[in-house]
Length: 107
Image 1 (cartoon, rainbow, N blue to C red):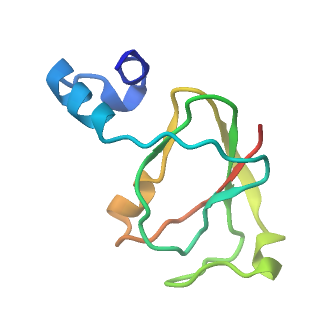
Image 2 (cartoon, rainbow, N blue to C red):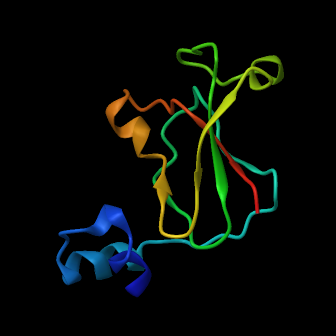
């Protein structure tokens, strides 16, 4: 619960709601360079970074309704690096259920 109390996404939430959310979380370790989200993919959920870092990449070419190919991945530019307490994946909640960015584990 203390992890979520420190997260910006939980600012203003009641402790009861934070506790309910934290009970629904599944913690997973991922290897370096693992693709966690791919631009153009369907909504997979909201993710929280507990430790390490992830790179947020924006495709140079928009890929509506389909995932990025390996060729398009080469055209991506890094727009952010997220660390402990940060979250990602919520972009699809306001984008018709489609993720706009690719997120890759860095460390």
